[in-house]
Length: 319
Image 1 (cartoon, helix red, strand yellow):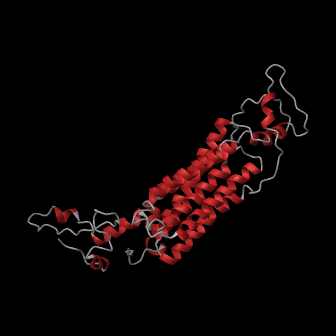
Image 2 (tube, rainbow, N blue to C red):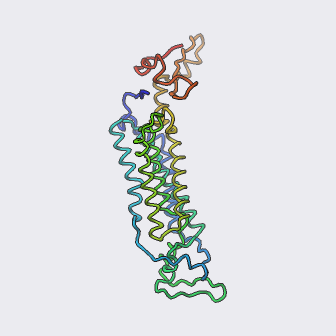
Image 3 (cartoon, helix red, strand yellow):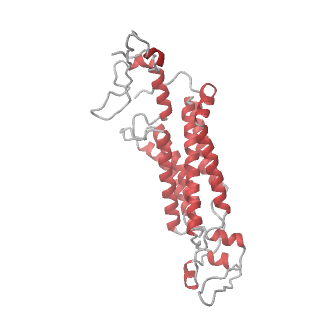
């Protein structure tokens, strides 16, 4: 199906207008970042940990296979670089802006949900014993058998943030969004059976899965933590993607909603109210704009509409 393009949709021509239109979205994005920082500063709930519960919490303390600082680089910066690369190819600022905005919303909403649940649940990590008793000498309350920790307070605080996994949720939020984005761009679901396209969109998900698995291998998380975290990130990424883009399997899945709205306004410009309300005015002829669809028994698609070549050239299809 041929893709209809506007004459010039660059940062210079439409960037400022687009940023002003989404100013409130960027403000909310900043607020989400502030909330996430606060959630990381506050003390999480210290769930009861008794002597008999430590059998599953004695795993050794290990360093991170994937450091904390590497997650934003993989889940945010890498997708942004790919999105910018596609912008230089297509020159579509609607796609650039909405993709980056959707990606950041996906990651920050996921971060707020993940850290809020972490603080509320307070599940101990698999290596909690060594966080609580770094010298290996354990102490318990004589009445409740609750642990009496004497380790570093910041290490113990981090030990109560096992559920869900932040590495997993952030990775699936960012790389999951990238996977949805690429599936629309390369038209994975065009019913032509190109498995190579499917491999391309599954690769980001594989990277996210490996990051999640590393959290279990490092004994920082239980398997339920990474499964839940990954599910949160993937679901939020899909919701945020559909907020700005059509579903990848749709004929218009290659571009954002805002782009097609601008295209429709170009083909069918809005009629001024003073013209419509003027007496003895000849009724305005309606120009029909067909929305693309490759499904049977629906409206004609862009590629099958007889007069669509004229519409691409700026000539309306009059009825």
